[in-house]
Image (cartoon, rainbow over all chains, first blue to last red):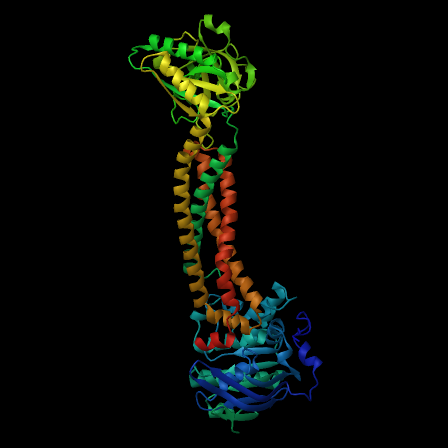
Length: 246
Length: 392
C-alpha cells in the first residue's frame, strides 16, 4: 500500500534523524532496468546490488551507455526499476505514493546535472529557491534566507538577480549546486557535474563537492568520466554494459 | 512565468480573441433573450388580419366605405367577436411606419425617434386586450376633437415627458411634414407589434374614426371566438367576395404571422451564432495548440520541478494556475475594449445588456481556458522527470 513520508513541514534532516547510522542511506538490491519498445529490449542495468553509506562520497565510472545515469535516476527516485528494490534509509521506496516520492526527493535528495537544468526564465535566486517552493511551512522570507545562504556557500551571492543565460558554465553549475544545497538534503546526486566545464572550473566544482562531503557530511554519488576526480572520492564503482564490474 | 513574455503574449492574444467572440455572442444572446422575455403587451391569439383587395375602387373615400360595409357584415357574423380598421402595420406583419414625435418648443423641445405610428379604430383596445396605464382609450368624444387624439405607450411617455409630469391633455407633434398636432388622451402599456425578438420601440396609437377617409387604414383586424377555424375563414372570404364585384379578402392569423416572423428574425442570429461557434471552436483549438506547444517546450523545466519535489498534482495546478492568470490579463484587456460599448452606447443597446454579456463572456472565458488547459495540464503532470531531463 502506498504511504506518505513524515510531514514535509518537519526539518530537512527529519528523514535521516529517524534512520539508524548503521543502515545504508541508499540500498539497491538486484536492480534491473529494461527499456522496452515494440521491437527492441534494451537492458540498461542488470543485477545491481549497491549500498551507499551515510556521509560517503562515491563516484561511478564507466563508458557511455553503461547505465551510470540510469543508476543515478533510480537512486534519485526519478525513475522506477524494472526489477529489484530500492531502499532509502532502510525503507523500500515502492511503498511510497507519488506524493511521498516527491516529498522524499524534496527533503532528502539534491540533484546536480551535467547540463545544469536551470530554468532560464527564473533569476538565480528564484532558481535556488525552487526546491523550497514545494516544501510546506517554508515562508517567503525563510525561503529567501536559505537560498541566499546556499548562494553564499558557492560564492555567488553577488549574482542573485542575474539570469542563467548571463552566467558562465561554471557559475551555472554553482547555481545548480546552490539549488541542491538550499533544501539541505542528506544526499546529493551529481551526474557528470564537471562534464561541460573546463579543467579549472571543473576543479573548482569538485572542490566544492568535496567540501560539502567533508564539512557537512553530505552523502554524494557522482557520475564522472574523469578518473582524476573519481580518485578523490572515497569509493569508486565501475560499470560496464549495465553491470557493476568493480 | 512573468519572464516568458513572447509565449505569454501569444496566449493572451488568443484569450483576448476568445473574449471578443464570446462577448459578441453573449451581447446578441442577452439582447435577444431580454427582448423575448419582455411582454408583447397584447393578446394575439384568435386574432386574424384581413387584407382587403377592392379592385376598381379609386381613392380613399370609396375604399373606406367598402371597408365599413365589410366591417359591418363581419360584426354580424357569428363567431366574430370584434372588428377594427387598421393600417398595414398590423402585429407581426413585418411592416412598420415609424418617425419622430416631439413635444415643447425651443430649448425645451424633446424629440423621440423612432416611434411606431399606429393608425387604428377605437375597437383595437378591446380586440387586442391592451392595458391602459393612465387616462382613457378612444371613444365617441374623440370624433369632435380639435386635435387628433392619441394614446401613447409608457416608453414614449417616459422618453417625452419629465418624471411626474402628466402627459394627459398635452399636445405633441408628429413628423414635420405631416403638420399634425396630437392630443394625448391616454397612456397604454408597452406595445410590441414588431415581434418578440425586435427591440421594443415606443408607439403612438393615432385615432381614426369609422368615417375617416384621410388616413390609410386599409386592413381589418378581427377577433374570433375560441375554436373558430377554417369554416369561419372560408365564410368570411366568401362573404367578402359577394359584397362587391372582384373584392377579395386574404386572411392570416396573428399566430401564423408571429411564427413566420420569428423564423425570419431568428435566421440572422442563428447564422451569426453558427459563425461565432465556429470562431470559438477555432479559438479553442488555437488556445489548446498554444498550450500544448507551451507544455512541450517546457518539458525539461517541468521535469526539473518534478525532480526537485513537485508532485504531479502540483505541476498540473501550476499549469492551470498560469493559464488562469494569463486569462485574467487577457480578460482585463478584453473588458477594457468591451466597456467602450456601454459607455459609447454602441448600437443603441442598453448598458445592462452589455454588462450582462461581459459577465457571461468572462465566466465563459474562464471555463473555456480551463477546458483547453485541462489536457495539457494532465500532459504536464504525466511528464516523467527522468525522460524529460534526458531529452535535454
